[in-house]
Length: 114
Image 1 (tube, rainbow, N blue to C red):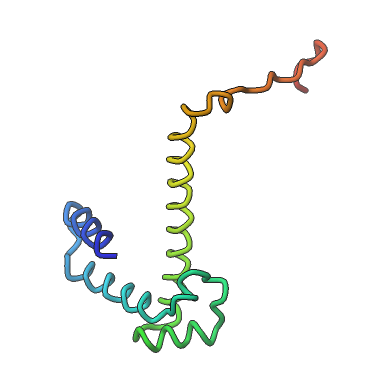
Image 2 (image 1 turned 90 degrees about the vertical axis):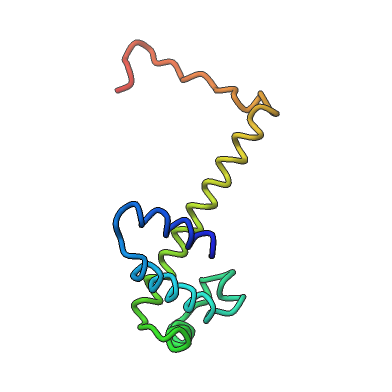
């Protein structure tokens, strides 16, 4: 989380966003993340209304902020997983040249594709 904070601070300073606002947003995200237990961090599907309410009380934020954080966190995890998968494919493509094999397209009988 600290690496993300440093990267975002550097990025936002170039855009002209004040560091105080960004630090406040990161503090809220850190509080929400710390209010979740390890099972909730690993599997966000178990979060129901009662758990979200407990997280919001523990972090000192509203339910809307918690819901937005969870949605953002899910999207970020999906994106990081996609990047990880792309890197894995790129690193293994040269090791397995048979993966570049493509099947020929089916031939049409003079009618085109329609």
